[in-house]
Length: 189
Image (cartoon, rainbow, N blue to C red; front, side, top):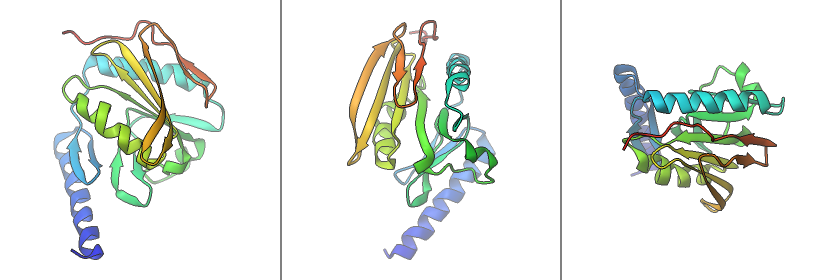
């Protein structure tokens, strides 16, 4: 397969992702060349995302802005992209007509683990965000009431990870922000 053939294939995959999203409603993503449809949000998951949004929106430095339903591509490959639950990047993205934020402008992505598709958030995206060079990935897990902050991406892996339980604050030292996890919802068993 030539590079041109591979590029056409990804373009077809991207078209398929956009068609699937338009037809079904859930977010479509292409992660390492694989089309993934995100499950619909549950009320608890949406509530957690809203809680985190409210906390971050009020505390971010002025140069940064918080976005929901914004996507970030793999550097150099706009046909490989993901749409985190929350994305913190350069405030200038708010003036862009593009739907993909420049990965070099992204400071933090936040994912709340889906009840039915936890492998995507806990395994696949950890490596993807590290490969993309995203400085910080905060993973909230309502299955067990925990959080993980991954930082310092290098060679496709995050070099630092901090874990905590609900009730323990997640300090995002690179942003000068603290996330309070007390009271975040947990999934029913």
